[in-house]
Structure formats: C-alpha cells, structure tokens
Image 1 (cartoon, helix red, strand yellow):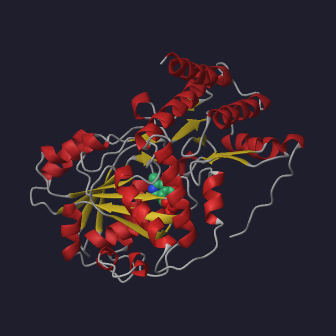
Image 2 (cartoon, rainbow, N blue to C red):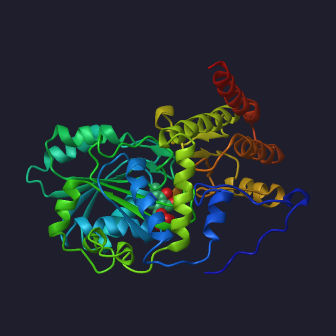
Image 3 (cartoon, rainbow, N blue to C red):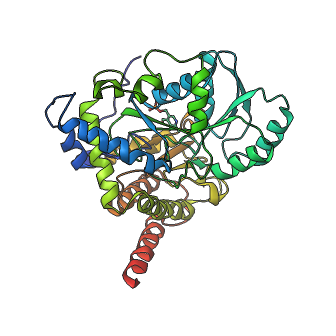
Length: 409
Ligand SMILES: Cc1ncc(COP(=O)(O)O)c(C=O)c1O
C-alpha cells in the first residue's frame, strides 16, 4: 500500500501531535521511561519479579481469580489465542454483532476452521439479550460451542451489557462458553469476569491499559481450561499448556519475554494502583466520558452532529462515535490534524467520512480532554458547521461540577 501525501501544516499545526484516537492511546511518560531500561537477564533477577507483578495484578483488573496468559501480539493475536485454546475444527460458534469487531473476531475463527453464525445486530444499538436467549433456546442439541461478543465496539462506540448477555445464556441452560473481547474497554468500563460468568476475556495493552501495542492478554475460567483439554485448534505458540506449566521464565512467553513491554506494563499497573485501583479508573473514565457526551449533546443539530449510539445508557466510557450528518467528517479530521495538531479517530467501515471518533481511554485528563473538545469545536466552526451550542461550555460544566462535588466531600 502507498502512504498518502500529507497536506501541509497550517500556522497553528505547529507543536505537539495531540492524540485523541481510540487506541493506541496516550502513553504516560513514566511508562515510556520504563521502556527505555536496558535489556536484562531474562531467566532470573529483576525481570522475573516484574513479570510476577504483572501476572499477579492482571487478574484483579479483569475481576477474576483465574489465570491470565500474556502473549506478544496485538489484539488479533489475543483473539487467536482465545480461539485456538478453546475450540476445535468444525465447532459451531455464535457471534453477537454490535458494530464491527465481534464480526471480525468471528471471521478469524472461520479462517481457523470453525463454523460461524452471526446473530445480526445494528451499529447503533447494543446486543439484544432477548435475541441471544431466543437463538440459544432454539439450539436444543447444544451444537453451539461458544458465544462471542465485544464489551465495547470501537467502531460504533457501544458498550454492551455483558451481565445481561450472561443472564440470557443462563436463562436457556445453554452450556456454550462465553467469550468477551474487552480490548477497547479493559481498565475503562466496569468488568467482573467471575461475577458475570465470562469464560474467556481478551484484551490488549494499547488502550485503557496505557502501554504501546505489543501485548495481548487472555484470561480463562475453569470451564475454558476444561475446554482447552480437548480443543484441537491448539498449536505450538499460543498453547496454554506450556505457558501455564512454565518450568522457567522463558516458557511463560513461549520464547524470549517482551522485556520492555513488561517494564511498561508493570509501571502502568502501578499507576492504576496508585490511583486507587481499577474501580477508580472506571470512575475517572465515566466522568471524562460524560464531559465528551455533554459536548456532543451541545453540538447536536438537525442534519448536523449526532451521537451514533442512540441510547445514552449504552455509550462507551472509552470511545465516542459522532455522526457528522451533512458535515464531511474526513475534512473535519484533516483540519484538526494539519491545521490544529489534533488527531481524532477516523470513522471505520460503514462510518467512513460520516463519523469521527473521540478516544477517551487510558491516560486522559481534563486539560487533554477539554483541549480535544475545544479543537474539534474550532474545526467545526471553521467549516461553518451547524452547531446547536458550545460543546466547550458543556464539557467544562461537567468537569466543573465534578470538581465541586469532590471539594464538597
Ligand atoms: C474492540 C476491539 N477488538 C479488537 C481489536 C483488534 O486489536 P488489534 O488492532 O490490536 O489487533 C480492536 C482494535 O482496535 C478493538 O478495538
């Protein structure tokens, strides 16, 4: 593929490249500094302790007492690890559509030899638990071996009610494994793997977890570990056995450990801990997301700006997808980027040129977030876009209200 020629930067396009895309997210300076450490012994000493800290902290982040597997890969590699360790060639699985990513995960399963059925959904609504129950109830022979979905779909900006999907599965007594992609939501949205009966949880380092792309995570329940025993898609690299029963540090990663990423992950987890734990991170994401939602509400106008996810209860705390109506979204993004130094997320798939996305995941703070809102608003004004009102005022009011409530405590 070719790299498109970049437009020249405008007068105000000088300065930092500010990122507000839904991953990779902003990496804290502390994490970057940790990655600059020199290579070290990979069999003993400091790195083995760092690894142990990462493996000890990650289950709590996902709300499980079960094991976690850390794989050197992007999210796709973690998806593949989940598939290969739990499924067999010819198995049937049900993918719950709610945007793009669950379907892409299903396509990977299909390429791996699994029969995939997609339970259709729309890209403006969450998964409908009643439809899940209806489909599983019809599978009286229990041919469906796994149900797959995302918690947050990064294209549509939806957050699904994972506990409700679990209840729907349980209402039919169906034994399928429940596999959830939390790649966009881990560390941003409340998630309780054990309490919600999730069997396989998948995440990656580059979004809410504040580490550059390169680490995938898969958490497994007892039932998933049981399924692993007979899964015939098991392979030489992703296989859980060798990692679970590692005789020495090297085998935990099925090869040379990702030294710099482990330092980074350990630092990022320490930062979450210092902030008061992952629950505080969820709370912070909710407040910051509310500020973005207030801005989008203020901008909204007939034929202009509009939320993609219609029901406010299902808008993700990690990413907001904004439809732009008559306003060309790509031109708006280009103005943000080249005239004002801010990169916002592109509308992907069917959203091309009719949406942009604001990532508010991970290392996000009020100055960064309000700057993003203000810059987007400036670009929209520069284009003469019809705006209902000031998103900047609305967003800062939300932040101000939160500050006041903290002061009053
Ligand atoms: C929800 C979700 N799942 C899966 C992926 C794929 O992850 P990766 O691009 O790291 O392979 C992404 C990437 O944005 C995502 O947002």
